[in-house]
Image (cartoon, rainbow, N blue to C red):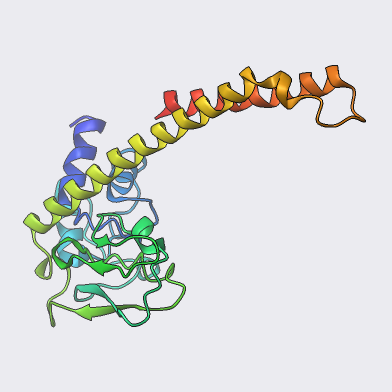
Length: 224
Protein backbone atom coordinates (compact mmCIF):
# COMPACT_ATOMS: atom_id res chain seq x y z
CA UNK A 1 0.00 0.00 0.00
CA UNK A 2 1.48 3.36 -1.06
CA UNK A 3 1.92 6.34 1.31
CA UNK A 4 -1.09 8.21 -0.06
CA UNK A 5 -3.48 5.26 0.09
CA UNK A 6 -2.18 4.25 3.52
CA UNK A 7 -2.74 7.76 4.83
CA UNK A 8 -6.27 7.67 3.49
CA UNK A 9 -6.93 4.27 5.01
CA UNK A 10 -5.66 5.42 8.41
CA UNK A 11 -7.75 8.58 8.21
CA UNK A 12 -10.83 6.46 7.53
CA UNK A 13 -10.28 4.71 10.87
CA UNK A 14 -9.97 7.86 12.98
CA UNK A 15 -13.04 9.27 14.77
CA UNK A 16 -12.77 12.71 13.11
CA UNK A 17 -13.42 14.69 16.28
CA UNK A 18 -10.59 17.04 15.22
CA UNK A 19 -9.80 17.52 18.90
CA UNK A 20 -5.99 17.88 18.43
CA UNK A 21 -5.31 15.71 21.51
CA UNK A 22 -3.09 13.52 19.34
CA UNK A 23 -0.69 16.44 19.12
CA UNK A 24 -1.58 17.30 15.53
CA UNK A 25 -3.88 20.04 14.17
CA UNK A 26 -6.45 17.58 12.83
CA UNK A 27 -7.15 13.91 12.15
CA UNK A 28 -5.72 14.12 8.63
CA UNK A 29 -2.39 15.39 9.94
CA UNK A 30 -2.19 12.57 12.47
CA UNK A 31 -3.03 10.00 9.78
CA UNK A 32 -0.27 11.38 7.57
CA UNK A 33 2.21 11.29 10.46
CA UNK A 34 1.40 7.65 11.20
CA UNK A 35 1.74 6.65 7.54
CA UNK A 36 4.85 8.62 6.66
CA UNK A 37 6.70 9.14 9.94
CA UNK A 38 5.67 5.98 11.82
CA UNK A 39 4.26 8.02 14.69
CA UNK A 40 2.75 5.77 17.40
CA UNK A 41 -0.86 4.73 16.85
CA UNK A 42 -1.84 5.24 20.51
CA UNK A 43 -2.34 9.00 20.58
CA UNK A 44 -6.09 9.29 19.90
CA UNK A 45 -8.18 9.39 23.12
CA UNK A 46 -11.58 9.62 21.33
CA UNK A 47 -10.81 6.41 19.45
CA UNK A 48 -9.76 4.66 22.64
CA UNK A 49 -8.52 1.10 22.76
CA UNK A 50 -10.77 -0.04 19.92
CA UNK A 51 -9.34 2.73 17.77
CA UNK A 52 -5.81 1.57 18.54
CA UNK A 53 -6.79 -2.00 17.68
CA UNK A 54 -8.20 -0.84 14.34
CA UNK A 55 -5.02 1.06 13.53
CA UNK A 56 -2.83 -1.82 14.69
CA UNK A 57 -4.55 -4.23 12.32
CA UNK A 58 -4.15 -1.86 9.39
CA UNK A 59 -0.56 -0.83 10.05
CA UNK A 60 0.58 -4.25 11.31
CA UNK A 61 1.74 -2.74 14.58
CA UNK A 62 1.36 -4.11 18.07
CA UNK A 63 -1.61 -3.02 20.12
CA UNK A 64 -0.48 -0.74 22.92
CA UNK A 65 -2.13 1.23 25.69
CA UNK A 66 -3.33 4.75 25.02
CA UNK A 67 -0.56 7.25 25.74
CA UNK A 68 -1.64 9.11 28.91
CA UNK A 69 0.16 12.20 27.67
CA UNK A 70 -2.56 12.54 25.03
CA UNK A 71 -5.44 11.99 27.45
CA UNK A 72 -7.68 9.18 28.57
CA UNK A 73 -10.48 7.23 26.95
CA UNK A 74 -13.75 8.57 28.27
CA UNK A 75 -17.44 8.93 27.60
CA UNK A 76 -18.47 11.44 24.95
CA UNK A 77 -19.70 14.85 25.98
CA UNK A 78 -21.29 17.69 24.09
CA UNK A 79 -21.09 21.37 24.88
CA UNK A 80 -23.98 23.53 25.99
CA UNK A 81 -23.92 27.29 26.46
CA UNK A 82 -25.32 29.11 29.49
CA UNK A 83 -27.48 31.74 27.83
CA UNK A 84 -27.38 33.98 30.89
CA UNK A 85 -23.62 34.43 30.60
CA UNK A 86 -22.92 34.35 26.86
CA UNK A 87 -21.69 37.77 25.66
CA UNK A 88 -21.61 36.92 21.95
CA UNK A 89 -17.85 37.29 21.52
CA UNK A 90 -17.77 34.74 18.62
CA UNK A 91 -14.48 33.23 19.83
CA UNK A 92 -16.07 29.80 20.16
CA UNK A 93 -17.35 30.01 16.58
CA UNK A 94 -13.78 30.39 15.37
CA UNK A 95 -12.58 27.50 17.55
CA UNK A 96 -15.24 24.94 16.59
CA UNK A 97 -13.87 22.59 13.89
CA UNK A 98 -17.28 21.46 12.64
CA UNK A 99 -19.27 24.72 12.72
CA UNK A 100 -21.46 23.26 15.44
CA UNK A 101 -21.93 26.64 17.12
CA UNK A 102 -24.13 29.36 15.65
CA UNK A 103 -24.49 32.98 16.63
CA UNK A 104 -23.45 36.49 15.72
CA UNK A 105 -21.42 39.25 17.32
CA UNK A 106 -22.93 40.42 20.63
CA UNK A 107 -25.76 37.93 20.29
CA UNK A 108 -26.24 34.72 22.22
CA UNK A 109 -24.66 31.61 20.71
CA UNK A 110 -26.03 28.10 20.74
CA UNK A 111 -24.67 24.62 20.00
CA UNK A 112 -26.22 22.36 17.37
CA UNK A 113 -25.89 19.13 19.34
CA UNK A 114 -25.71 16.57 16.47
CA UNK A 115 -22.74 18.46 15.02
CA UNK A 116 -20.76 18.73 18.27
CA UNK A 117 -17.91 16.20 18.42
CA UNK A 118 -17.00 16.93 22.04
CA UNK A 119 -13.56 18.18 21.01
CA UNK A 120 -13.66 20.79 23.81
CA UNK A 121 -11.68 23.31 21.74
CA UNK A 122 -14.27 25.97 22.45
CA UNK A 123 -13.93 25.77 26.23
CA UNK A 124 -10.58 27.50 26.78
CA UNK A 125 -11.37 30.42 24.45
CA UNK A 126 -14.59 31.44 26.23
CA UNK A 127 -13.79 34.59 28.27
CA UNK A 128 -16.77 34.18 30.62
CA UNK A 129 -16.76 30.39 31.13
CA UNK A 130 -20.32 30.03 29.89
CA UNK A 131 -19.63 26.78 28.02
CA UNK A 132 -20.15 23.47 29.82
CA UNK A 133 -19.85 19.77 29.05
CA UNK A 134 -22.65 17.23 29.32
CA UNK A 135 -22.03 13.49 29.25
CA UNK A 136 -24.31 12.05 26.57
CA UNK A 137 -23.09 8.44 26.43
CA UNK A 138 -23.05 7.34 30.06
CA UNK A 139 -20.45 4.63 30.63
CA UNK A 140 -19.81 4.09 26.92
CA UNK A 141 -16.36 5.25 25.79
CA UNK A 142 -14.27 5.39 22.63
CA UNK A 143 -15.96 3.89 19.59
CA UNK A 144 -18.75 2.60 21.82
CA UNK A 145 -19.65 6.26 22.37
CA UNK A 146 -19.22 7.23 18.73
CA UNK A 147 -20.20 5.76 15.38
CA UNK A 148 -18.85 5.57 11.86
CA UNK A 149 -21.82 7.64 10.70
CA UNK A 150 -21.05 10.38 13.21
CA UNK A 151 -17.39 10.31 12.23
CA UNK A 152 -18.30 10.70 8.56
CA UNK A 153 -20.55 13.67 9.30
CA UNK A 154 -17.89 15.32 11.46
CA UNK A 155 -15.28 14.78 8.77
CA UNK A 156 -17.54 16.18 6.05
CA UNK A 157 -18.36 19.26 8.12
CA UNK A 158 -14.71 19.82 9.01
CA UNK A 159 -13.61 19.58 5.37
CA UNK A 160 -16.41 21.94 4.31
CA UNK A 161 -15.31 24.40 6.97
CA UNK A 162 -11.72 24.23 5.73
CA UNK A 163 -12.85 24.99 2.19
CA UNK A 164 -15.00 27.90 3.39
CA UNK A 165 -12.20 29.36 5.49
CA UNK A 166 -9.78 29.14 2.57
CA UNK A 167 -12.28 30.91 0.32
CA UNK A 168 -12.80 33.61 2.93
CA UNK A 169 -9.05 34.15 3.25
CA UNK A 170 -8.72 34.48 -0.53
CA UNK A 171 -11.58 36.99 -0.61
CA UNK A 172 -9.96 38.93 2.24
CA UNK A 173 -6.64 38.98 0.40
CA UNK A 174 -8.36 40.23 -2.76
CA UNK A 175 -10.00 43.06 -0.82
CA UNK A 176 -6.65 44.01 0.69
CA UNK A 177 -5.06 44.01 -2.75
CA UNK A 178 -7.77 46.30 -4.14
CA UNK A 179 -7.37 48.69 -1.21
CA UNK A 180 -3.60 48.77 -1.68
CA UNK A 181 -3.92 49.40 -5.42
CA UNK A 182 -6.31 52.27 -4.72
CA UNK A 183 -3.74 53.80 -2.39
CA UNK A 184 -1.05 53.28 -5.01
CA UNK A 185 -3.13 55.18 -7.55
CA UNK A 186 -3.54 57.99 -5.03
CA UNK A 187 0.12 58.00 -4.07
CA UNK A 188 0.58 61.63 -4.98
CA UNK A 189 -2.35 62.61 -2.77
CA UNK A 190 -0.87 60.65 0.12
CA UNK A 191 2.52 62.33 -0.29
CA UNK A 192 3.21 65.78 1.03
CA UNK A 193 1.33 65.37 4.28
CA UNK A 194 4.59 65.73 6.21
CA UNK A 195 6.12 69.13 5.33
CA UNK A 196 9.39 68.24 7.05
CA UNK A 197 10.07 65.12 4.96
CA UNK A 198 11.85 64.90 1.64
CA UNK A 199 8.89 64.45 -0.70
CA UNK A 200 10.68 62.19 -3.18
CA UNK A 201 11.93 59.94 -0.42
CA UNK A 202 8.51 59.95 1.23
CA UNK A 203 6.85 59.00 -2.03
CA UNK A 204 9.35 56.18 -2.65
CA UNK A 205 8.94 54.90 0.89
CA UNK A 206 5.16 54.78 0.69
CA UNK A 207 5.26 53.23 -2.77
CA UNK A 208 7.51 50.44 -1.50
CA UNK A 209 5.20 49.77 1.47
CA UNK A 210 2.10 49.60 -0.73
CA UNK A 211 3.76 47.42 -3.35
CA UNK A 212 4.88 45.04 -0.60
CA UNK A 213 1.29 44.88 0.66
CA UNK A 214 0.07 44.05 -2.85
CA UNK A 215 2.70 41.32 -3.18
CA UNK A 216 1.67 39.78 0.16
CA UNK A 217 -1.99 39.76 -0.86
CA UNK A 218 -1.18 38.15 -4.20
CA UNK A 219 0.99 35.51 -2.53
CA UNK A 220 -1.82 34.72 -0.12
CA UNK A 221 -4.24 34.20 -2.97
CA UNK A 222 -1.84 31.89 -4.81
CA UNK A 223 -1.01 29.97 -1.63
CA UNK A 224 -4.66 29.24 -0.86
